[in-house]
Image (cartoon, rainbow, N blue to C red; front, top):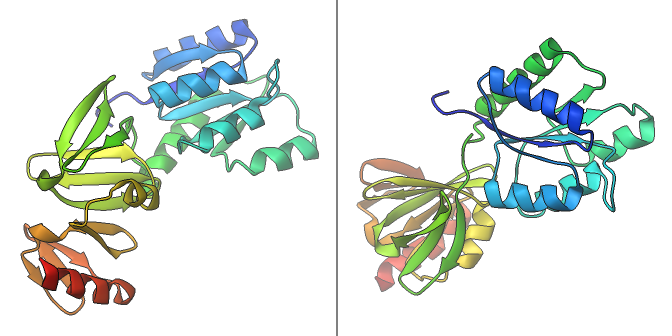
Length: 244
């Protein structure tokens, strides 16, 4: 992996948190920060979009680690590893609802931390979940959208977009010049895109119909990219082509 995996630590014991941060840094990971309260963790996660969150289940304050994870997951799909000293069944079942990638039991040693995080990173890559995807769609106008990238808004003209491909809870926006990976399920992205030039042709693809090079019975082509057409979307596609 060419870029460092970015990890947020949410732990209310600052000695444990500092130790985890030191160990992760030595292993080559980038720690985006340490948060001790759930509310601050939500804000940090949504603003900085880490690749992984190490979350203590029993946080002090108004919301625990499980509730914090649920709030984050309402707006962002970030892989989660729970840190826990509590192994009771009730807590475990509640934690499972947030679909964590792993549990690390306290107390843990350096090797346990290293292996657990490495396995999660490997699993993310195998599943095709993009690591270091911290961009997000921030706004739309008639002829452009704005993507937040590295702390600033980037203008992207709609006419430059060839197609959008879904990758789990991410969208890969393919343009004439470069690609943009944003944190957003394809359904949510489609709802924000009001342009009539964009049409869904498959559960994993939305295309700019003005960029079509060829249309066959079961697929279409844009810049030599072969994109499948689902039967349920084909009639809408043909109707739209006739209007162009």
